[in-house]
Image (cartoon, rainbow, N blue to C red; front, side, top):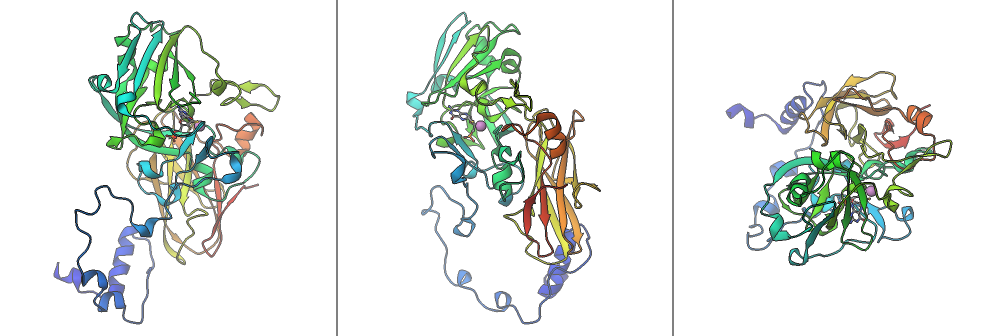
Length: 421
Ligand SMILES: Nc1nc2c(c(=O)[nH]1)N[C@H]1C(S)=C(S)[C@@H](COP(=O)(O)O)O[C@H]1N2
Ligand SMILES: [Mo]
């Protein structure tokens, strides 16, 4: 222990960096003048800090005020029916804090008290029921981590590299630990007709209602009627007090402020599943019922909002991967635009239908890079290149763009959204 405290700051940093980079060669810091942060008494050690009676619910420290949701103003006509993006470039691990998790509303976020909350089940059921929030709390509950990705995530990139930042190209995603009741338990309670050709239509309490049809097989599988996220109540913008969680399926089906569940013998074909959230192909026909979010990944750092802040030497490349079909089995990273690939290290084996963090710890030679990540899921599916995706889907689509993303990183460490070939 003694020896640990004695080396100079320089030697300590060198040792620390070598550990962090898994033994990558090269010192990361060199110093000549004595560092006043080490040699002088600092303010924060001269006075007492903030008492425990001052902040009943904490916000991030002021020095992190750049890590916030942002929108792209020209994208939508009004902020009421709009979208803002998760700052994925600046987050670590996999859990998205609610306060900076992207929001997507069709008619703004509403304030609905638990006391005023009602959930109705009707249609092909033996007993039409209305639940209060207190009723829902008496059903056995489950807790799972899932990602929620808007089908429009990366949708601006079909025709060419457009938005300069992982937050804007890939930030319509969040990943939370949800607590809720399996939808099948409520269907059972109402005596619903659960035969496989039936559909469940779900609606929100907001003006848009955002109604969607869910096939019975999925409704009985892993769908949750959720009332907690990351251990606390859902935030207003994520559907307080109750939202639907539809693991692996497009975010639009995750109805917020859930007010009605109707069992039907056919799909409703609502606005949100016909004129929206369908994919127009090259020949003008449209794909519909494209519910599952296919495997996808993105390098979050370095990226356009996260330039490399240092010269050659140890560099941590990091990103996120996910699949609506299950677990991420493997992520590869390319530094030369997809010519050669190296297997990335997974932060930990991710949950099914949840974000997985990956790392590639390199010794950067300072040469420009064309950085790409490529996800593979447990079904063997491999994330396609943009070319491959365009061959099948054309360029008329908005939704379900899960292609490989490329960042060009120059010798100064500045990254830019580009396309190869
Ligand atoms: N009631 C209701 N539910 C809704 C929406 C809405 O506008 N109203 N937007 C949907 C869309 S398009 C998406 S992508 C997700 C976004 O969830 P979030 O706002 O928690 O990120 O909610 C979905 N559920
Ligand atoms: Mo969405």
